[in-house]
Structures are given as C-alpha cells and as structure tokens.
Length: 302
Image 1 (cartoon, rainbow, N blue to C red):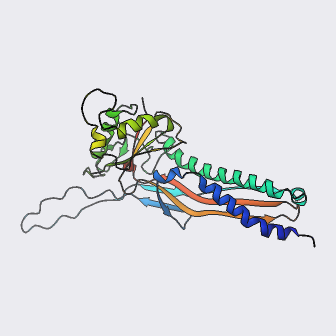
Image 2 (image 1 turned 180 degrees about the vertical axis):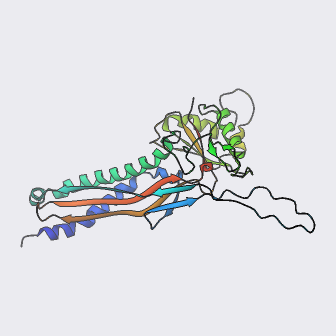
Image 3 (image 1 turned 120 degrees about the vertical axis):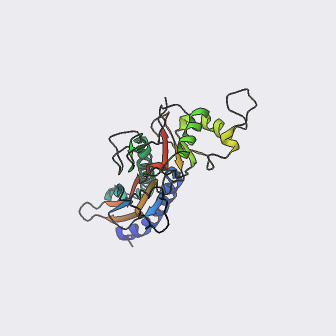
C-alpha cells in the first residue's frame, strides 16, 4: 500500500517539533538577565510612571492636612512584534524520500534563526542605549544625562565622562546609582544588581569582581566591590553587544527593562495543494523595552 503525503506529514511533524525544540533551547537565553519578563494578552502594553509625592509638610496644631499632588508621569509603550520564518520541502524531495535528512537540517537552521533573532532584538535595546534617536517614554535614550524630572531637574544614569571598565569607573557607577532620586527629588535607595558586558571585557570583569585584593596594584588593600558584595548577582557576558567598550549595570529598580511575551513559540506544518510542497513555520510574538530608566546604568567606554 502506498503511503500518502498526509500520512508522511502526520509522522514527520512530531519529529520536527522535537528537533526544533531541542535546537531552540540549546541556545542560552542571554536576554533573561537583561529584562524582567511579563506576559501580555493585548496588541501592546503601556506603563505610566508614578512620580511620587515629594517630602511631607509639617502639620501644625489645628491646621488641615496638606494633600499631595503627584500628577501623571510619562508613558512607556511596548508594541509586540511578530517574528516568523518558514521553509518548504518540495514534492519531489518528498517523493524521493529525501525529506528525512533535509527536514532535520532545515529545522535546526530555523530554530537557530528564531533563537538568534530574539537574542539580537533584546541586545539591541542596550546596543542603542546611547542613541538619541531611540527614545523611551520620557523622550530620552535609555542611558542619558537629560532624563526630565517633575521637580524641574534632570536625572542621569551615566557618568559625567565615559570611561572604560575599571575599578574606578565601576565604583563611580555604584556611587551614582546610590544617588538616584525619584521625580520629586527624593532618594530611592537603589543598588547595583548585576554587571553586563560584551565578550571583550570578560577578563577585566573577572579580575574586578572576584579578586580578593585591589586588581592591578601591589597594595595590600582589599577589593572593596568584592568584599562588600556590591554587585550581588555578579557579571554576565552578552555575545550580541555590539560595542566592545560599553558596559551596563542593572539595578534593583522594580520597573526597569522589561520583556512582554505575547505569544510563545509555536510551530505548524501543512501541505500546499498547488505546488505539492510541504511547509513548516515557526512563530512567536514579544516586545523588549524599558519603563523606568533607573533600572539601568550605562557607560559607553572611553
């Protein structure tokens, strides 16, 4: 009895799905340490910054209490993008029993492409962090010294002068982060949580983060960053950071950089009547961005 194309598809699809899943999951999700992930069931998500109240006033005896005026902060929008890719096997390849080897190679290549696209999309938020043409809800780049505050001042999540990763520049970053304020000027007591670097800085970061003594000196001083546990989650290398000198610190700000997952990875296989080809597609929807710039401190390097 001849085996129909429908029977081949029925037998082939589960195997391709297993190959796809194994290959897709083989690639490290480097974005997971750069973004807090949330789910969405809409075409886009919007988050409104709450600027706070400012300092309270003294209430004198018999006087009425003052009511705080907060106002509404800027709005950050996450528009979900659909990412999809497909391949097809010709009717002749199916007919000549070439579908087994071909489909395995093509499925692995498809999984690599989908995984790489996701990681590159995530990394580009940081790759464009200093680009004034790529702005967030407050009209500024992710890393800027001109984030407008409601008290009339500007907030900054970068150093006054960019510098390469070193003991001094890292300490300066941690001091700056500790000085972050809300939109009303009240300190928010943030701390550095993790250091994020390109592959070119991995050896520098290893020495800075893990040496017991001060790196690069003959002094008997301790490594204060290590000894005080100032960056408790350590450092992470991102292989899709494009600037070999730029580095970032994620803080414990609750609404910093975010990823919204609208539709998880799905695959589908079907035959085409007109051509006789078999088509296999992968698809997912997500968005990357940031709500509060205080979630990231960036340094472009010297």
